[in-house]
Length: 94
Image (cartoon, rainbow, N blue to C red):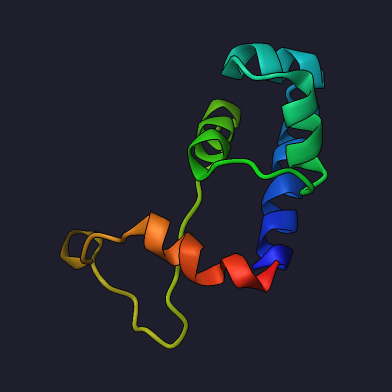
């Protein structure tokens, strides 16, 4: 899970730079501190999934979750995903 968090953080940092935004600009847009953005981009903070998803949304980055070994399915037929439970199941991987 830690590797995935680093990949998400790296994608966010790269996209922020593409947009020409400073860490302060992104922080302002998200109503968080610049320190939060700095820690998020370094994958060192304890950012909530809500804040991370808001950051990705502001940056125009979409996030998808795939189940290894599962056949691709029609999006409408997929069951609701309990993201909090998924994250909790991987917390020990840090």
